[in-house]
Length: 438
Ligand code: GLU
Image (cartoon, rainbow, N blue to C red; front, side, top):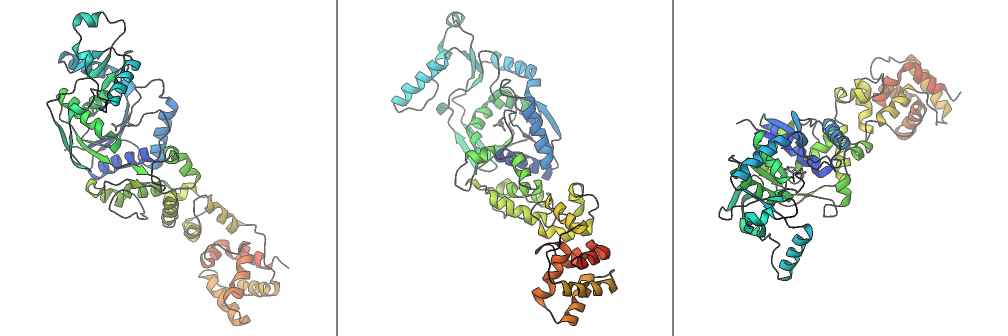
């Protein structure tokens, strides 16, 4: 079977961490199964969808490394929806309704007052042709659920699912102005694009029930479904904050895409979050059976910690294009353990290249160091040779031995391992810095 997944955001806003997680699940499954990952922009709401949001979705996915194999937008596909809608109409699977929003609201209130669920009463189904013809307004359309057909499926995350169609309202699929609601075009596209796995959040479980009957009505075998439990913030619910937390803020925080993938691939599953070196272990370990039913807890602090751990292992090749000119693999490896975000590498590179302002005051000692450094063999481990010789000569050890050197050579009290840094600074600059107090 050729596996096809799809990520179907509406371009009515930026992707947030919950959407990103859904995109990732779809991407991981497609990668793991050697399948294809599609992006479908659900832009049937022409008023709220914008080209700018669509562009941002493409850009965010590219930045995350989740670029789709193919993308489509629903606004290009209205002719297909029209044709398939006509089939449903001819077969009696859809029916026109004329109630206003106020009328429907009143009906729901009456039901609620009697303690009943707000299920549409199908009044429009009972209209005669003459009554329909006499309606002063254009109809909106509902899909007629088959009340005799129990809705069941085996969800890849949630296991066996059952919904009673009698307890569901016939969903409105098309507005009076002819525009489409989400429900039916999604099914038509899933069929047309041969989607094999619909992977999304559990807020869509009821939609799946409705959509299963639409697949049936359109004569198609439904795909498999996987509904992941939703994300919660560290405070316990999907906060407003999570709803607006996306790639821009991650980037500003210096978070690596890989850290985002590593966290989002594992939260809500029984597998530990790991500081992976690339996406391969996330792909290999991805399995719906590992998902739990409890909400997945997202914690920005956990992401930041994971980000540093991942950063400390990133290879030079992965980051080279974001490092300052001249920085090579040895420099990256020397500096890498001391940074929390890649942009900080430039600060340390500036320290290597200088000039640095000396904060040392132990001038006689530094003069001693300069004399030794001038005669050192700089080709192998100069820091070791310098400090060993200084120790012998001065009897110093520990902080008094090392700190004045670090201060003179870097202008700072803390920083990367001097053994790695000193060869990068090099003989000429080192001598100059050690002598600079004189
Ligand atoms: N546009 C829908 C959403 O963002 C897609 C849901 C689906 O995956 O079918 O919720």
